[in-house]
Length: 382
Image (cartoon, rainbow, N blue to C red):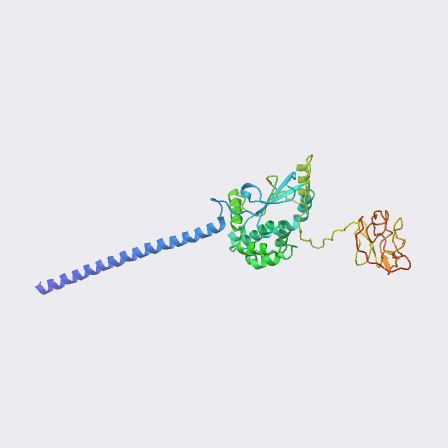
């Protein structure tokens, strides 16, 4: 073999060796890049998870969070409704985006309100954001904060009911829109104030809602609504499902022999669909001059008081100062059973008006003669 051949083979081996070294170096750099990229990806995922957890469980530990006025229970995470000394307590874990919570509210609202308003039951509401976690978004959080803002204004129950009456589809995160939550406050008399608006816009109680959500998760309930009566879960028994009548019976049994709670009127309650306006006993109608007794009153069109005695349709005549003229027929089901003349600056002499009952629909003329009609300016008592 010639020297040139040996040199050529040696050069080829060296070139191959150099190429292998370069290949190993490239592979090493590639592995390093892959490892580095993986580490970065893990860190990014961890950061995202951390943000999500912080968002959903903020306030679950550590320092105190701002709770709405009147909040009660462990860590002040419950909003109370009803008499504080009621013999039974209904604990409700709910999410304003949750359709099953809406179904509970629509089915049991009237019953629960009756039990609360009679002093038999006290409610404790825990606001959670289960749907935010399942479907994403912030509607549960923002609605929960807005409800807490309503509690700060003394109107939680009414606004709570308005939110459910206007609940969007589960997948529509409409409650994330704070302006919409503020708009709904207009349905509750006296709620849409600068203080409420600022509270909703700033998310004043967001951390409180998040802590309530963390408390719900740690309790292991797992679904909303979760309904407890005196600490016992009463809503998830599929073999013996709850009904409004069963709830009444359970409360009655639990309250047996115990004094009822002291009930304060709920301020600015939202009117229920189809609900009748309360009747004011003995009130004088300024538009018609009619005196309404206790119960459902027939209306007398144009009945006014005058300067002398006039006649009424009750058991005794009313006393006036001047005779007046009835403007037209009154509508009423039967004669009102007047217990005596009404009192007040326009009704005449002393006495109380008895109940006016509508019973047959026969029209009667107002009576009296002469004199000018004087619009009433006061209210009689009944």
